[in-house]
Length: 220
Image (cartoon, rainbow, N blue to C red; front, top):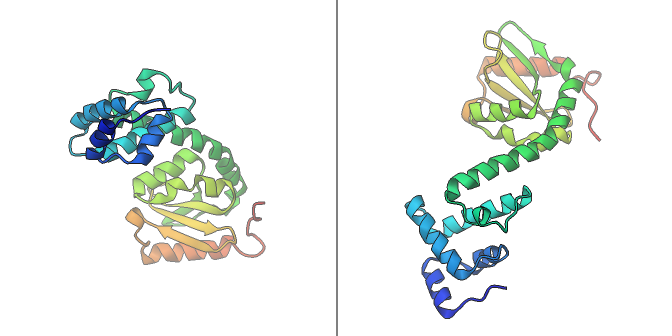
């Protein structure tokens, strides 16, 4: 258990480090003096970022490291030289590990929904094939579908990728179909609604593929 002196509390108070952050850092056997010294060093690198924000970044990085099985007793893990870069690297690794668990479910759903694909003169639509493609869709179109891995894997929704036939690999519009077969969100870049002819294509495809006879069975 870490002990805090009156001087420690005054110094940390001036840095606006609250008791929650101190308790979290104490779990990693980091002393009050070490908290002050490390935050001051990182403040020089982070510039305008507040001490409290740096502390939260540090706590998150330590949690990520622990969850990924790193030895958090090591000094290099507890006190990384470049906190921001370390945090971002661990956050990315954690996301990859998490998404790997969803990938098998997404691939299985893609295989089950293959017959729902359709190609017209100007547009084509097909189910998302894997977690990597799902994340790339969200990044390229600047919306949140990249975080739908768990929902797809669990059968709570279906995600289809609509493309121009002359650019079949270029993200264009993302279509969500709810578990009951109804149309959910339809999102172009930056969550903008698709144009009229695109929505007409989506509705025609939906009517053709998601009739009572053809609608895929619910998961579960």
